[in-house]
Length: 88
Picture 1: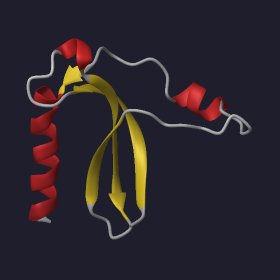
Picture 2: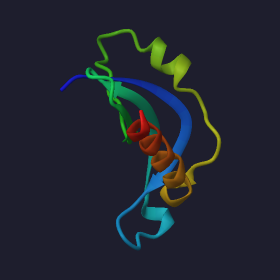
Picture 3: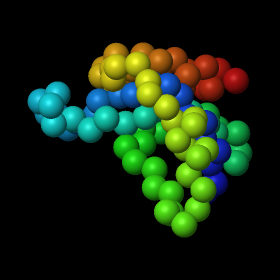
Picture 4: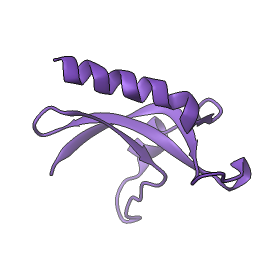
């Protein structure tokens, strides 16, 4: 499967079950679509760039963001995007 992603400025704290907030992992929300045009949302904790390559694009575009939100706060947005896709 091939996907195309675009980063957003949203950072989400993700944990399992009753994970205390201090142990949750901060993930950046990326939005995009599959090669067939199906909208997707990804929560990505890390992106690695080989140190032999130019990293200036990442440093420039993945800059500081607003404070993290919880996955519970984000869920309505994800569900709305899914419902919009199902109607089309």
